[in-house]
Length: 156
Image (cartoon, rainbow, N blue to C red; front, top):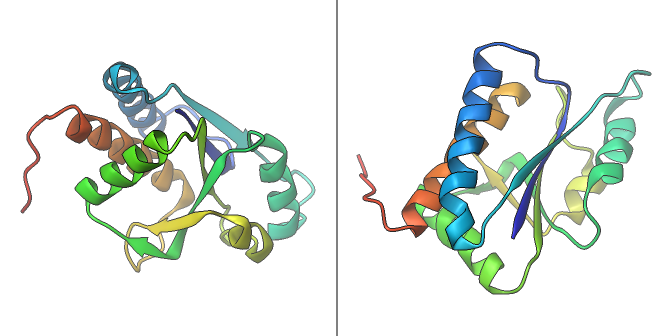
């Protein structure tokens, strides 16, 4: 199952980009044997400042046809890393060929696009900077692949 991160804004060089690239490399390496990956990052920018509706149109333009859509949203379901891993495995095993995670801009995801999502997840009730959400998501994707590969997982 191919994985897509569809996000508003361009992540420039720096520590966040380095972390994102590292975790995606690890995910691709671990996930390949599990039928997961590769990950493709699609970045869109609303240069005309049209707000969430314009961002949604741009995001819609990069979503792979027929992909399952997961909205990264503070109203989404909070889950543990093992639950996240099982969620991905269930969708892979159910025949999904593409899974797209959408990350909105500073104001979030347009309600119309959010309503089209097959499911939504949250990294907690706090709102996180959308650039950091990419890094957090990439780390959780790598962690999910590691869990599915049988690596030890430590709960605090």
